Length: 496
Image 1 (cartoon, rainbow, N blue to C red):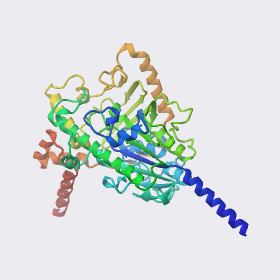
Image 2: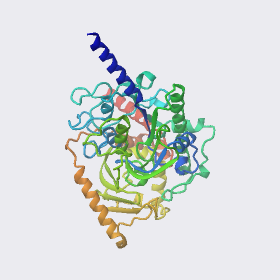
Image 3: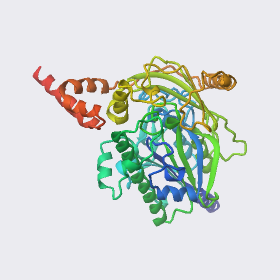
């Protein structure tokens, strides 16, 4: 009996040593942000902590999400599998539908190799607890995919007793919200709107400049949150054995960004910091899909990457992704369907519903895109140039083709230029192949009904002064107006 007990103790001791040898992993996701950091060459913004992270780690230049909207993009990363294949591609849908049994969230796979999984962090805005995936789940608890749907073990705090741990932390400040004005007002050095550099597809207007400056203010606040996470690791003596990954969950919240398959919607920042094993100051130009980051985390943890994953470990000798397959489907009340393939040099987009314009007057954008209102008015007045007009035309082109090296802002659509017929044909074929490879495992479609369109119509009728302000590029507060709308309807019901 004593020998058996000694063997058990020895086994547990060895298991503990193996666990301690595994790196901790922190995955930081900043919401709604393209490669708009100082270390990526973004002018007018200061990001010292992320600069340091890049200088001591690896900065990836060609990382793309598989969907430019938060919940489909996050669904693909939670499963390491393209969201179309898993039938999680429609925004805020199928929230009561369990995953097909072949799929398992990567947090569960980490648990199975000894990791404590942590959601959020106590020091960041709103504790960074956002999950937002399109399948049945719970934040905390066990997982079996049938009766138990928990994705994480605990909230907010990582301690030495949790090692090895995986923490997923969401930085919400860069997402559009009513805090944008407050963050700017409290900044010791708010970005000067007069000095910002706008993309050529955006009109140069004071309201648009101010909105861009506010966005950069949020990025600077977010950078400080990254710094706080690093400082916590250092104070707890865990910095040396912790891999820190930084990304955006989808592109920036502005024209051509979030919700669209152009570069500002799909290309995201991606930095890995792990000086213990990775040489610092590297710049990597490989094409990377956000699902590859999931597979890479499993690889770092010593977990086997399952066959169902479409993502592959980036540091595997055989890694050689040529294209990232992007998709845009339901977003709130707009039932879209567009597909894309992106390489380091080329971007191709196929719009299966060209009759739906880019500016579809979606309620979310009405409240959260000052530039849309300003430029919509300028379009009607004939004041937009040829680079700015396409977003406001009554329909989209059926196909788009851009040379990213010669035209990084995607100002010239080459799809209808005979000179590029060969590359168009090749990318069209690649997209069709991906369509077949990522065919959904299910046709279940249970979207959450959105109140936004009704709120906009009520706003026009009941609060015309607020609506006029919105047309002039002022963010009047979506939550404030929604609360007023709900209160008005409650009073109406009581009277009846």
